[in-house]
Image 1 (tube, rainbow, N blue to C red):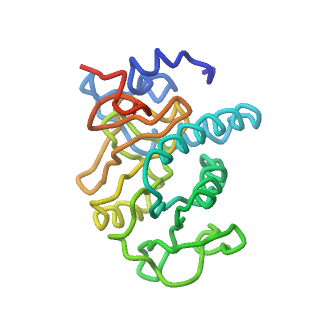
Image 2: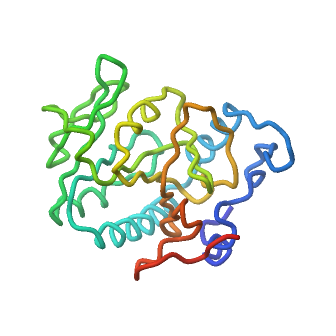
Length: 232
C-alpha cells in the first residue's frame, strides 16, 4: 500500500479498513478477530517497510508531532527508544530537548512494571531489559508526566492498542490519568477496529504520518485550534 495515500481519504476513513492487510477478520461483520493474527501480520508489514519509505514517513510523523507539542507549554514528555522496526522518535525527542521539555523513557523494573526516568541525551541510555535502551537514575512520579508516546503493533479509531503481549503499558497507563497518551504508528497500522480485552488501556490520540487523530473528537487535530475530519 503506497504511503502517499490521499490525506483526504485517510481523514475520511479515520483508520484504514481492517481487511486492507489481509488479516481476514472484522468486528463489524460479527466475526471475532484474533490478536495474534493481527500482531503477526502488522509487525511483519512493519518489518518489511523499505528504508526510504520509512524515512519519509517518519519525517512526516515527526513534523506533525513537533507542531502539536509546540502548541503546549514545555513539560515532561515520556517517549521511547525505538527497537527493531518501531517508529523512530529520534527527531521528536531531540526537538523536545531543544525546546525546554524534559524527556523520560520507560525502564523495566524488577516488578515487571515500567517506570519513567528522565534522560537529557542519547548517551544517558544503555541497554536494559530485552536489550532496550534505558536511562538510569530515579524514577519520576507518574503524576508529573504531561505527554506519553507509546509504540504498538496497531491502534484503532477508538484508541484501542495492540501491543507486544507483555502488558507493560496496560499496567502503567492507569497511573497517569492526567497525561495525554499518544500511540505512534504508520498509517497501515491504524485500523478500523481491533480486538480488546477488559484490561487493555486505550490511547487518547493516534499519531501517524497523516496527522494527530483525536479519539474523543473523532477527527484529526487542527493545529490551528480545533479538529477536522470528524466522523459521524
